Length: 118
Image 1 (cartoon, rainbow, N blue to C red):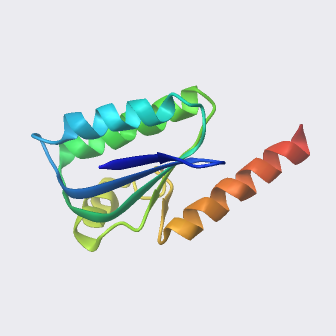
Image 2 (cartoon, rainbow, N blue to C red; image 1 turned 90 degrees about the vertical axis):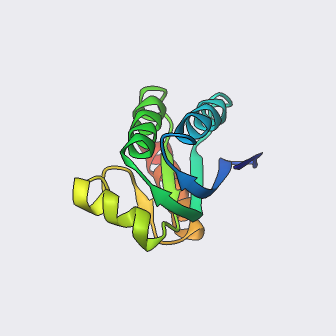
Image 3 (tube, one colour; image 1 turned 135 degrees about the vertical axis):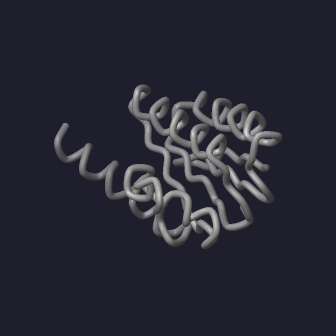
């Protein structure tokens, strides 16, 4: 996993399998990524497997971001992990986007919408 603080959002890249042995590391990285108070885009293009424990981590991070008034966007999900999100109905809830650029565009649109309403 790699995490970078960019000007308008935090970028987290996840690779490999996210299962019972690695989900605690993902949870720690997501928790650290939430600290600066920016939206987070999680690049999942390198994630090859996701189990229920990893899904629970993503759900907790999503809820934590919402509670802090931030957004968590997932991007570029491989077909195998995407299957779990589809089967559980979490695909739309977790704001999954086909590409990183789509996720960043969605963040920008949300920020503009919020600024217009303020």
